[in-house]
Image: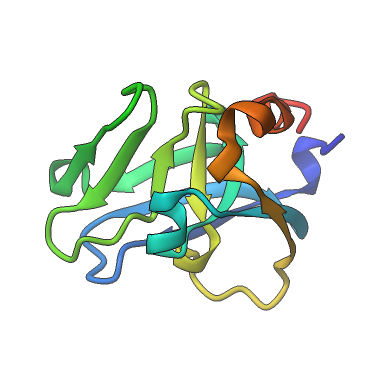
Length: 136
């Protein structure tokens, strides 16, 4: 369980900096490398957080959204540079998935990457649902 006092607001955004966000993360976090088609093609490394631990600082007007399959996941991209720095995941529609590759460099952020079998999403998605809860 991560207490609010153990979290640090970390900034990040897209390549051209038209979209900027912050996510509250602990100093050490476990993130997921998914092998589904869109994550594998974009190199997205997931740090899933509750909605209360994510805030869009600016750039709402520079975001476009892509949906496919069930339409639950809201894949957001910068209209200017095309980078997907965060999105609303299907597994956690009550939270946000932040691409750790899009976080500003932070020497004190330590993360372990665990594989996630998104190619067999239906069989494994339940293993992620706890990540968008406040106690995650």
